[in-house]
Amino acid sequence: MITFIAKLFVAMNSNSRPSELASGIAFGFWLALIPGGNLLWTALFIIAFLLKHNLAALLFSTGLFKLLIPLVDPLLDSFGGWILQMSALQDFFTNLYNIPLLPYSNFNNTIVMGGFITGILCWIPVYFIFLSLVKIYRKKVAPRFAENKIVTALKKVPIISKISKAARKLSKFA
Image (cartoon, rainbow, N blue to C red; front, side, top):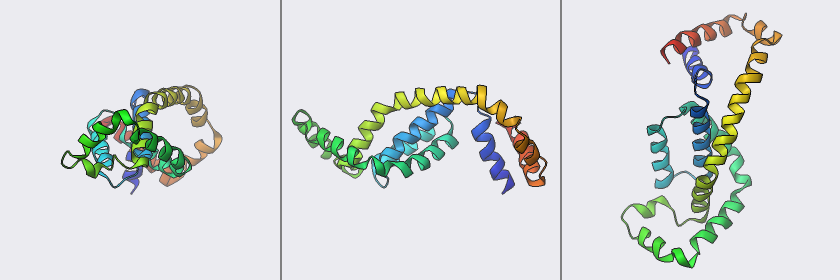
């Protein structure tokens, strides 16, 4: 159990590239926008594991944003409905629907389409927002947090020191 916590800790804190963390968060946001249980979500999830970004950030942000997405579901529904009802795209969607297996992606569902297109449109802004937040965190917040009296006191607790030692050992391999 301690090694698992240490691995998660290392994955979240030892990544030297803020761009990989931001990419993982942006991809997690995109996955959170699309309802699960369809071929589109599954394909994007598999593609996410083939790209180079922080997977811990991806999984954590997907779970976190999934909690907030019900607040914007009505907007995704109306946006997806607007896209699916565009007369210029009707033939395109009809042709997509006639391709084997593609109907299982549920692209004709208004929330799925709204989430998919919103994710595409928001990926770059979300990426740059979190890229700057990660840089700010590493430059200003992390050093102050490490010097905090509570953190130094917690490091003296036996289980916390074991996690810290395991994290240091794992960070040499990461």
